[in-house]
Image (cartoon, rainbow, N blue to C red; front, side, top):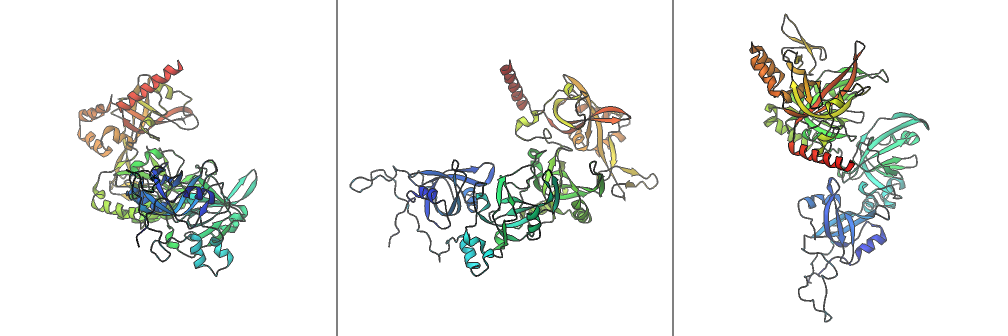
Length: 619
């Protein structure tokens, strides 16, 4: 029997909007205006077309790869097998949960004019042929899609009611949840669990804790429990296990405190239902991460969001104790330096348990150059760019993930012999956040910076454009540093070995690290500015060890002085910090280079034109 000619399902969009959601349906629609959803490269929106009407819809996550490899494209046809509606009445959308590709691009938009027929029942000349589609597979076919509720029903049909939460209502993907929905049930894995903490505020005090929940599509959300709910669910929610959760509430996420990328955050109360799911654990990822390359840290500097980073450990410092000013409490601290395929390095400061426990493990295997994955670290502009852990941070040593294996292979083949450069040394503008204009944010003249009120109480940050006008050739320029932790070492005059107070070890060799001052000038003023190792290396174009060797061999200091003079009167854009300090009861202003970059004259010209246009408007 011939396969019937089938096109889009007539008026199915009106039906979907009327019904609201369905676990099992068979609606064929055409894909139009396919595009990414915001900045998320894994999520896509499209206009669903049924020939009579169109409506915005979201591509299911499991079909994201089909979009990126071209299998699903504009003018193609898909069969929607499961869906729900999301959003308010004014901004609704169809969230497609399960679907399958029916046809690649047919080259035109299906509409009222595509299937006109004459009164005699014959197609008009020039009309496009109908699209032949395969009928929806039956249950025993390989493409049969079973709803989450049906899965739970079949696997837990005889279980207690509380263990069958998925039966009474469908299981929702996290991406479909919003604060306006009523009852929902989600199936998620606990991929991170914070400690039980105590809080105090105007309403009283109590306990709270956070968990990070991940569903089958890899979407994550942070859930928080307070007081009685915290006491109830803290022992119940175990790291790594899968649960059905319902009767929670959602609100817009506070990005300052949220540790996952989601527009919403969840709160579970004492009446929320949480039951362990014993089925299909492997379908939900056990560990989710979104790695940022070291050379891509610039846009995240001083941002509120936490990021994940992976790298090969280059060095591990000894452990130090830092006393907090507010609580007078001593906190352990340790610094590690990591590198990746970009041949850039970054310093990561580990605090608390990460410094003592994981840090000690790293210290014992540092000679093997282990790979570390660190989740939820904050990016600051210290030394141009640096990373810092927090209580929510997680570190894995030599994780069994593709990125780690790829990094290990790179390091073994070429990375171990590659010349590494600090990521902060060439980061334009230090706290860069967006585009070419970022180096013009906070742009100041030196006459504005050197005022006695600037930097009083806390450091302030600016970008300045000018020239290094002078470098004192007889200053110290550098110090003897530990090759492990970069702290200052002292040389034993008898044994010629070097003692590191921070590491509590004696070393045969040491390295030199810059700590120098330069006079920086613009047409409005000048100031003495401190430059540390990464920034000074970028400025002078050589390491402190190389400069020391040149200085020692140059008896008359001619070559040495000439190298310093090469740097002067070259235009730079500096990202600087300004802080008022006190020494011997006298206030002094300390200006430090955080990063530097060469002047891009094209961007400078555009900036000047913008400034001129702004002045004309104000005039």
